[in-house]
Length: 167
Image (cartoon, rainbow, N blue to C red; front, side):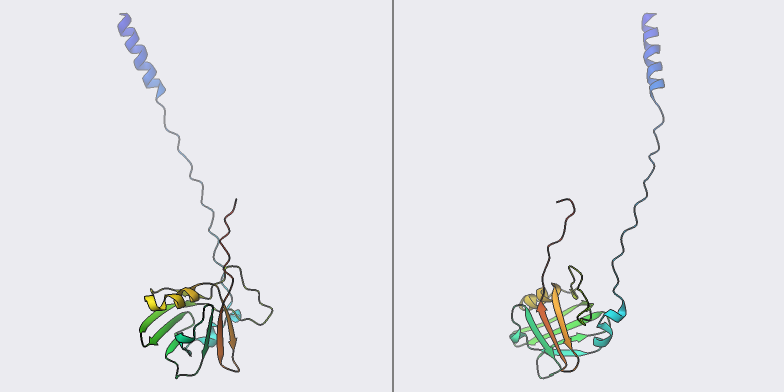
């Protein structure tokens, strides 16, 4: 008899100990911060779209590249539309095609460049002979555009390390 009462007591404890699982309320995710979109009147994209700029990769020095309208030079930077670029490298020992996007800010002296600003984003893989140029363009580049003398000067800007909160 004691065994039966003991078994019933254990069984009742098990039955009463089970309870409904609490529903966990999902906490709504905060809206992600949208990437800042630069107004079109502060960009050179509309001015440059559809234009071709020539350069010679042999004259590319670490951190500097000069482009102009002299079509006797073998290499071409083509602003396909108001967002896409295409670079054709036509050297004797290097033939390559580099594609990407661009967003070049006008520099009228009053414009401050945002931290971490990169005017070019390279989307295609470059061949080994054009890796230096591709790496240069995808980094922080200062763009000087002179409409009067039809020259674009690209110089290496400052690459700031990413800021990690809490360190």
